Amino acid sequence: MGRHKAILWGIIMLAAGMSGGRQAEAQTFRTYRCADGTQFIVAFYDDDKRAFLQIDGEPVTLAKRLAVTGARYSGAGITLRVDKTGATTVKHLKRPSTACALI
Image (cartoon, rainbow, N blue to C red; front, side):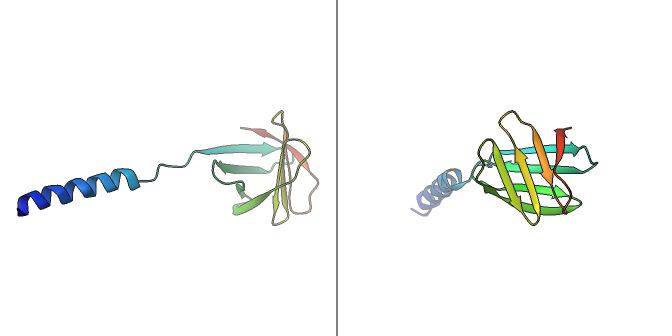
């Protein structure tokens, strides 16, 4: 009887591990270089509406804001805009908005 319990317990644990394991969330990382020399990395996750930036050596989380076209994210004095064609601009540290390109 003890052997059967051990086998049954092993099967239950294996099934729980397979069904309870969370799949990795899909993510997109992009690296940009801007006209004013600024470089930054931005990450987007499927289940999250925020943008996660690494700019000027600092991590910054930007909340998604209302935009007429495309997407706009802002927070901590930084605004990131991505229009529907993919054109991207960033404004930070009280500098004017500058165009950025994927690298």
